[in-house]
Figure 1 (tube, rainbow, N blue to C red):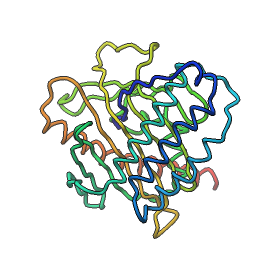
Figure 2: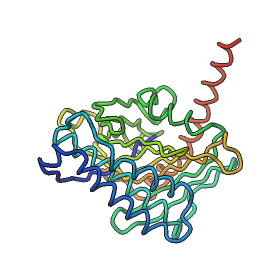
Figure 3: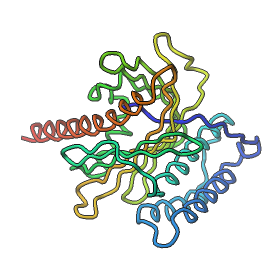
Figure 4: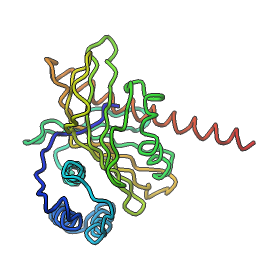
Length: 285
């Protein structure tokens, strides 16, 4: 998987760095307002869940004192979630890129301020909590089962929801696209039965550009996992991806590589989850 993030600078005053409640109220009022504006009459259930649950953050007091840098990462993660939800809630203008035999689908559209974004829509035979555990709690193990990823390392955890990561993506077959790496801020949240993993590119002083890798940027991104309305033991899995791979690569190649990467990721994730449950069943015998 080519992880998704988008560089966004957030200015936060020292006063807010001392007052977490003030920052959270400001950020979440903005998110709730945006969700209300975008959803319009009859919003979908998962957007309603985000609105209801996000309001709880405005009254939560953080015990830990965060530095100004930490606060900026938290703000960036929440910005990534807000912008991703805005994009996903707009159903107009999406064009089909790939429809696999099993029904997996990749759509795309061009946004004025971002460029081309891709959206993977699949149905997985797993509950959202199980997928959240694999993609968030076991994030650093992704290189073991996804051949598009060489390594993911968590550089810093900030509170319960935010982390800064370094991702090394493998080159494509034939080295059409060479090795890329990303430094990302990620925001992982649960809202009722729906799980989110949003992110964007960021700067981290402890991870300069690496020899042999092109430092790419992408985002906003968001993986949304919510129970299927037909079967709560299955998950409607949506992955928003936007990316700037840098370098001189024709757009036709980039579009093909990114859409195929999303389809491949869904298949690798299915195999990973199936293998995990097979192992648990064997150990139980």
